[in-house]
Length: 357
Image (cartoon, rainbow, N blue to C red):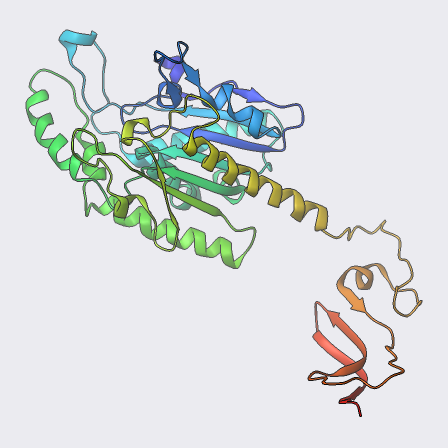
């Protein structure tokens, strides 16, 4: 069990890695089996896609997987002795996730690297809670939350799950001969206080990042097929307000398992990731060099030298001369136009409306 907990060695680490992608499993899952497609008649080998498929699509990513004890009950006669912490909550797992990532990224000198989460079921609540609530108790955790650029939620019960209520009833019987953790199920029940708190704080976190970029991209997927006639997480619970609903053609427990690169869910998820990663690269390429060593050069419009800051924050155009009448013009013709970070848009020189002959 110890090897499956926390965030250990990367599943994949590209020599050109400039982002981190971390997988977080849900209830009854672990850092490997949640993301592994078991062998079938047509595919005789198991496929652990974060390690075997994802690196081919996201070539500049370091891929990690976080594990935590997500059991709620244990049948001693079937599986042998195992202890289940009876009072462990979502908060405990969120703190463990943050501390594991902070420690690993500090040890590898990558604390400021952009970070993306892919989370299944309860793991989505663990991640949302981590970046919006428990991160505020520590500066290093808070800095990590600021590096998050995208989050993909697979069947996450933001509004709870009816299954949790049924499961808790079953645990009353199971607890007679097995250690159980009822706190996790209470957290997942519809209308629970912890769910309300997580949703409220996560919405605040997303809005604050919109006001103070870089913003955080969000994708929510729901299960298309029921499990034994019942949806574990309803579509309405899996989709956050304001986020376009996406689906995966599987039942709940199989949402994170892909056999090959041709599965629609795999294609959708990797397309999202690559789009977000490419957007990061574009932003970096477009960032102005405002260092003191940057040398000024001539402005293209006027031919005059400008200082370093003006070069990067001012756009100028020279005079525009029209030698013929302009027919059907419904706008304005101007002299110089300058826009600066401080002053917005200003118009210098004469303005002429010329509707022609």
